[in-house]
Length: 382
Image (cartoon, rainbow, N blue to C red; front, side, top):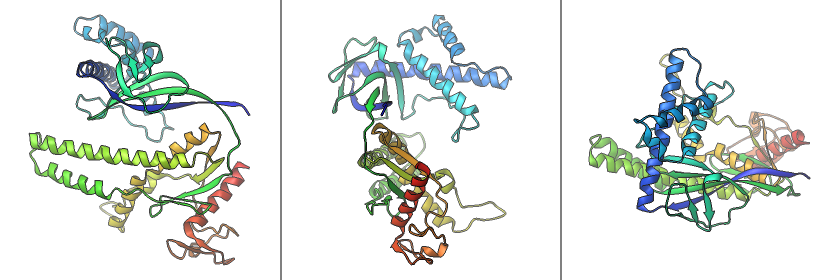
């Protein structure tokens, strides 16, 4: 079998000194300024029905901006930071006009007080030695918590700040040998059980009850306080911290569960349209929706599960091991018998019980659905 090339990111906690933080914040500011100035130029061109400037033209303008007295401060940070900012903007504009892009949206201006800030540097301008990274224009190396070995050819590094902590993500290009892996499995996701495998195993959902109670409490505090006051800012900071806690817990859970499944030869899952599944049921003024409260609760549960992120993790982890994630049609997967493939809504007697009206096959409904997905995937894969 041929070797396969893929990209892997290693994320570590960064520990810059107070002096280094000042410089990194200046770099964030320069990146943000270049993005906003270039975006303003793009929007002005669009408004006047001129051609939109792309990366090459914007990069030439960056060179001219740095020569002016007013914008001479752009000479201080490494030029690669601002060039990567223009590359990202060019991609965002391309996605905005791409009709095939499902989540296309207009690029937004970046704000100084955004909770998340980041910048990227190519491998040609930094060096990593043990648990230190030497960055351009910094006298001393910056320390980071290196808890695992970095494998592969380093391509770039991203430094980020999430409002409370600093991180470094090292992007590497890795070449691996494909190898024979275990047989495939069907995987059916749900709300009561996060996932059910065709071999009969279940993955229990993550519990956010404690964090959600905290979040609701802090959000009420924000709503009751005067906007812009010190007490309002403190309450708002608690809301942001709780959101980060929920996000960190979710990503940790998804990474652990996806890693457990990454040694499969292939996994077959439903090709879910999560955006459509979580649409509001409110309806219109003329025609009100039905069971709005129940649908709202279901939507919240669906979004908390983060199936889309889970599938993305599964996909790249399987590929790293030479496996494959196969997405099949979800239509009637809950109502189809995995033995005789007879389809009937009456087959699923309850949320957990499946009894085929044709052949009499009885099984847990989620396990039956995962077996149906497996058979569909085998037909497609074979």
